[in-house]
Length: 427
Image (cartoon, rainbow, N blue to C red; front, top):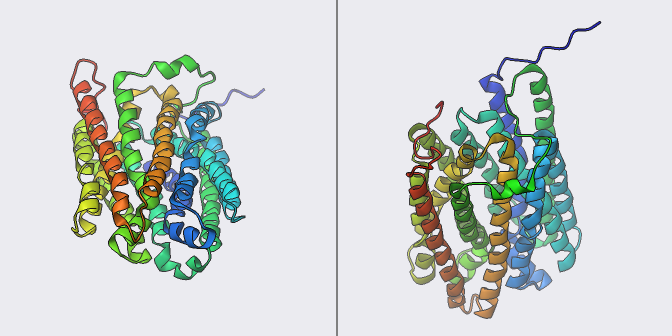
């Protein structure tokens, strides 16, 4: 007769946690590359396939549309089947979407591919975010999030600079999308390697609370506190000012400022370059000093002037893009890990899913809105002033982000604070 196996009590060593982080970040790397593969291809799609700005906006908007529901379902799936299974599942969906996007020049087919990709991509991000919270909560959580974003955004950097390292690929619309599919394979391989590592880790080490629950109640969706909803509001306004801008950034830089596609791609990738370097540093700063809500206020403030500077002045584009890069590094470094301090571990997947759901409402709406604004204003190389309306809309989003971050800071200095201003690493 065999005795019951004693559950492992030894926590995972530090090196094991960081290998886990690298593997899930590889999955995110491929995910980010596929998403940003559209922006440097925008003018090629216009010239070779006759796409309008509204069509190009649709390719990124439709990515977000299913996630208005899917990421919430994805968060519940994560809470039920676990991070290792859901990460592999969603990575496979990402690859399928990338393959469908490159398969045909038809706008409906390409849009369908982006829709399928979006169904997996945002849920994959939620799964990876939940996994990091599980392995690093109470340790170097903000720094770990920062490192993850750095490695993931290397995928964006590679995609936005592909006109430089893969210039010949842009002679035909399909080749850059084929390259994106290769990165989709890398995404899936990273997820599968993480599955192996966590399976072994669960047998050998005590992982503590794993963020999974047998039963998720939908009424839980309405029980998150005020600070959580301020973070959600900041998330949707901030990212709606960043990613829809990047959808049209290369085309805007080429037509309104007369730069080459290679230079436009690099300018857009400056956001990623800054984030790759500075996000882990800001995460480390938040771990050391706390003050997370205050840092979010500062990052939101930086976002406000940059679009007006690009629209109405001839100041070097490197200046506003550098300022935007600092904001793009700072806010995500503290915003996502802050949720782990506000929401219980057993509901963390659902909380991140709900947050990403609302974010995707903004991304879908503003990709479509900016495409419409550019077309209705006649934005083009012969009418660069047509881009001004879109830049004004992005500025309003920056102002809104500042308002919500200030409300969060006030809440976290009151009697119902969750410690965003005070908790430090190891506390």
